[in-house]
Length: 62
Image 1 (tube, rainbow, N blue to C red):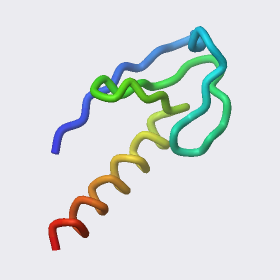
Image 2 (image 1 turned 90 degrees about the vertical axis):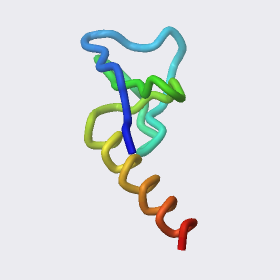
Image 3 (image 1 turned 120 degrees about the vertical axis):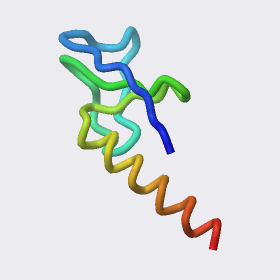
Image 4 (image 1 turned 120 degrees about the horizontal axis):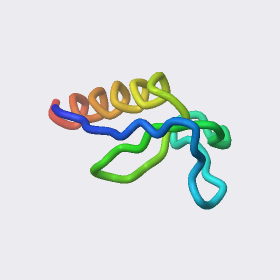
């Protein structure tokens, strides 16, 4: 499984946006997944999302 993202420093999205993992508002910098364009507040939230997604896929395959 391969994930790609863009790290945005010292900027906020045009509109008020929330992290897809922890639901905190994004400010000062964020991470955006390229495929889905979903925003995450930092690499830890993105890693948690990827881990949960991988576990869901394993469960679905069993």
